[in-house]
Image 1 (cartoon, rainbow, N blue to C red):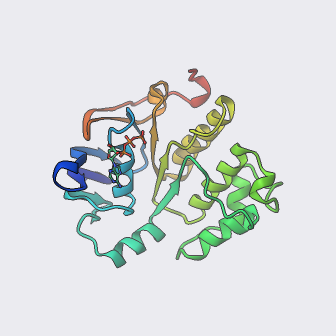
Image 2: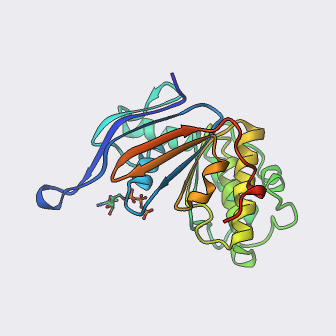
Image 3: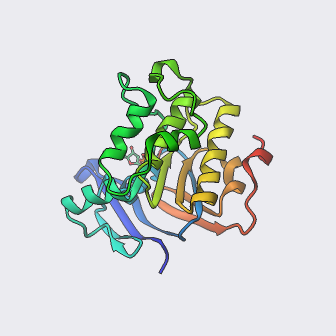
Length: 233
Ligand SMILES: Nc1ncnc2c1ncn2[C@@H]1O[C@H](COP(=O)(O)OP(=O)(O)OP(=O)(O)O)[C@@H](O)[C@H]1O
């Protein structure tokens, strides 16, 4: 059994004439500890799939299993617990609380989790030991995204889901963030799923999943992923 099993998932928004099939029988797997990259054009269903995988949305039909647990059949209370304890989220826009320092932002997330890590240590691990007491507005975009990654990692999640994590960053800063995510996957053994529009990033992945019109059109594994530093686009 794979760590993530996303099987024949349909997601329909709206009704009748206005029905939108955001997912139309999407199927993929991800093994434990892999870094998976999800590629696809705008509207292909990537975010919908990630939201369902993270327990933020539910499938209309199909099965979603994570670590042997049936997320698609979970109750609301079970999904709350799953989102809290098992999943870290990183978004394009960092969604930090503006009137809390970097440290307080990370502590806030860590507080709600049973096995959380030390917030200051986690910030130091993402290279922000010197900036912990700064407010988000005093940090660059890349630093704010590091805080957001630390906030996700301090929960000590099994699964890190990233939706366009470099979408708002310049080229070099984006590369550093992707390096951090690749290192996190390698060193901490966390399963990482990254959504991107940028097909040049495909070689960084252990597993590449391509979405088109709500379906997975390609899934390949790469036994020798390229370090981010060696990828140019
Ligand atoms: N809550 C919603 N209500 C109605 N339609 C939705 C909703 N969420 C997504 N959709 C539609 O479902 C389809 C898939 O959207 P989704 O956001 O998953 O695509 P995506 O591949 O992530 O696109 P992008 O790269 O632009 O973020 C789109 O047509 C979108 O408009």
